View (spheres, one colour):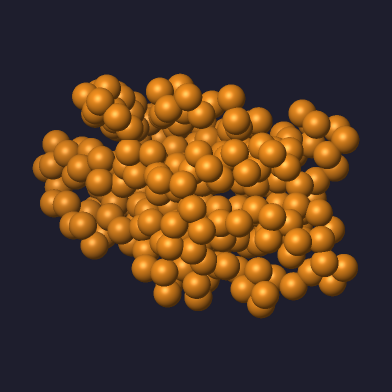
Length: 241
């Protein structure tokens, strides 16, 4: 087997923006005359799409909105998110990301993003950080109807990459996902992939229990070693190596 693709989550892996999202969700709930609970937010929203996050938070407070109403709230949040980023002189891109991208480019492993975030948000960050040219495809919350932990986003990413690179012939088992939340880890595993859990959002021990392999920082990922693991005739999971 060969490592053919590396798939990145976005929020919490590429950009450290969870505090911004939490603040914006809090503002939306307050505007709806509802109480915000940080514990609720972590339980419901981390690793999931805005639609899933807002829908469940509102339902827990007895507020059932139509799909169009949820979409309006999402648009309001997206506009506020863009304004927040525009006010920052430098985006909070995670340390070690650019070096990891460089390692993957050297060995010519295609990269993609699989996220529940809106495409406009992903593209805005990639454009401002000059990282967009490194990712062959993006699967965003606009592309799939269900949120992580459902595996649909990861499966769609593999399908898109195989269409883009017919010679790739990648299967889920050839892919490595990089995630920072339990929902994301479960989604990638259900798609049939191995997962590196990076302890940007949850403690290292939690990532270690749930992912095939865990690191504290992206800078600890050694692409050459990962390739060697995938090249083993009877490949073990990363956790077992």
